[in-house]
Each structure stands twice: as C-alpha cells, then as structure tokens.
Length: 470
Image (cartoon, rainbow, N blue to C red; front, side, top):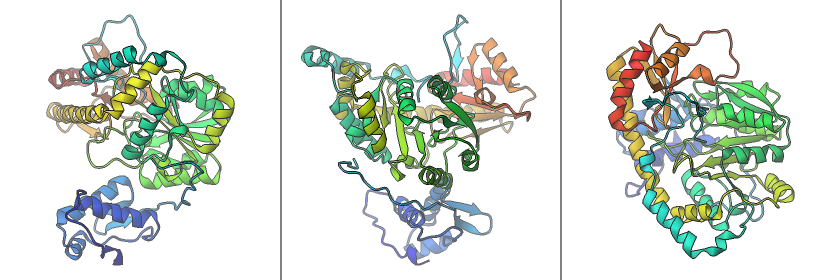
C-alpha cells in the first residue's frame, strides 16, 4: 500500500507505534483507506518501514481495539466501516482550546458492610487533604470578594481551567463561554432537559438508573436502547422515537464496554442527519489503564454533541462540581432563558478547584490515583483468577473503576447478591441495572467496583465473594 511510505521520527517523544497508529487513523477516518481494504501484513509493513514486528503489531492491535480495523483469522487486518461526516464548521469566537452514585445506593438502617464492590466507592486516602485545605483557607482569608455573587455559568477562571484541561486531555472542542459549572450531574441534567425541549430521550439499557429518573422528573419519556458487548446498538437507537440520546461511550455503565469507532460514527451520522443531540457522559475516561483512550465524540461534532463530566471520580464525590459543554445554539438558549440564574457552586469551592487545577495539583493527583487504581485492578483480577481459576471470566477491565465478573455457578445473580449481603459484602449484578427485563435467562454477571478497596483487603473480599458465588 502506498500510504506505508511515510516518514516516522525515531527521535520524537511520541513512540513509533503511536506515530504509525495516528497515521493509519487519519487515513481511515478521512476515507483515503476504504472499508474492507486490507492493511499490509505485519511483517511486510515492518520490513517496508524499518520497524520491529512488535511495533507494527502494537499499532494494528490498538486500531483493532478502537474498532477501526478488524482482525480476521487467516486474512490479516481489514478496515471497518466508518461513516464519513462533514468537518464541523467553527462558529465565530469559538476556539479549540460519574456521577459517583452509579450503583443507586441509598442510606439504610442495615448493618454496615465489611467490604464493598459497589461502583460509587472511591479511595478517600487519595484525597489531597492538606493541599485542598491550604488553598481553601487561603481563599477564605484573602478573597472577601468571593462572598459576592459570581458569573451564572461559573467563575471565569475555573471555566478557563476546565476548558484547557478538556482540550488537552480529551480533545474537547470548547471555549470557556460554552461551559456551565453546576453542583453535580443531576442539576446540570435537569437544566439540560429544559434547554433541549424534546419529549423523548434514549438511554442505555442496562444503564445508570438515575438518568431516566431525571428525564421523567422533567417531563420527558425515556426510550430504553439495548447495549451489547460493544456498547449501544446503533440500529436499535435509529428505530426508536428518541430525539436525543444519552451515552457513556468511553466506559459504558455498567458493562464497561468502550463504544468502537464504527458505532460512534453511525450514532454521529444519525444525530447530524436528523437534527438530534447526543449527550456524551465521559464517565471514567480518566482511568484508562491499557492503551490509549478513545477520543471523545464531541471532538467530531461540537454542534451535535453535548459533553458532560464531573470531578466526583477524579477528586472526591463530595466535591459537588460538574461541567457541561454546550453547542452554540444551546448556549444562546441558555443565555436567553437561564442567564439570570446564580451559580449553584460556592465561589470559595470554585476558586479552590481553579487553583488546584491551575497550580498542577490536579494533574499530579490524577496520575497518582490512576497508578494506585491500576495496581488494585491488577491485584483484584489476579486474586479472582487464583480463587476461581477457569470457572470465571473478566470483561472490560481496561478502563474505569469497575468491570464485569462472570462466574460459572449454579446460583442466580439475585442469590449471589443476597448471600453476599448476608456475610457483609456489597455487590450488584448486571440484571439490577436493566430497565426492560425480557424472559431470557442471563448468566450471572457481577459489576465489581474496586475504587474503595485497598490492596490489602482485596484477598479477603474475593474469598467472601467466592463464598457467595459457590
């Protein structure tokens, strides 16, 4: 193939496999390499480019994991179907710059659990107590102006810091004036429901229960669209009556699936051709442990994709700060209809978070948290294999603070979860996140969150899980 005659820079800070991956990625998404076209064999490509076989294989495997190519036994790698979308037209003045309670738990009078695989848990020990307290105290004593009302969208410094972070980390196309800061995802979603002014929104099934509850509380109907091992099924979405769709493409909750490129392009095309919106919840995208994160969908169409996120996972659930990046039409509608609103986040909290990001503490803390969670992910997967052997499977453990665990057992999901609670272990099954319960019997699948488990407690928690399962 002629496109393999490219110049790679061995002196670049970017690894050679990423240079090759990025080149092939551009060729595929631009349409210069077409659906079904076969990539050169790995050995042939390595010889032509003067690379090691491992370098070429890593680039190919990364493209396959992202859904741009498909590996077929005996026929190598072939390009998948990727819908070609027109490039977004930047508007004037625009520059390119989970919620934690996913398991739906509520406080009860039951005895506290000894160990928990609940997805809402995070490690409190990772919270930067001293740094946060110092910054907050400094603002409290030196910034009396923060006692007054700030900008309705959130303080400008914080919105600028969030804009810069999202651009660098996730490729989000945004400017500070497009960002709304709010006290938690629920508030922002309620606001968005009124901005969208539609009657029906598609949500993933299985999915996050609170989403359709918020939609219905704001007068909308929810269309439950099926999810399989690769995320939402585009054909099911297209056959629904939905006027918008709520997605978790980077780490589908609760299955953990990453929506592949081909499906992303079909959903984007559906939104573009039918004048509909995609609400992209970039849940857990910060915690990619193996390979590179997929680019966010908003980067491909900033005018049809509404991007939302929160600091609940990256800092702490109690930091009730979430953000929403709106397309131009919706930001104009917001200014007209809600521009008189006061910000729902304390200005002292906003300025503390701004300095925490601006002074580099957030980046360092995120790296520390990612490394810590990677170690406990590895430990948990290892312990599960040690205890269950071949009588289990682990799926989608590459991203996020939870994954699917599929044990071979004669017990049902409900029996496993009930027995686990009896012995002091918190865990939920995948069926408990389904909105439409068909007559088919699904094999037991447990959603294991590991954010709140320290490494030392993992062996005991797994032994308790084995007792509940076996």
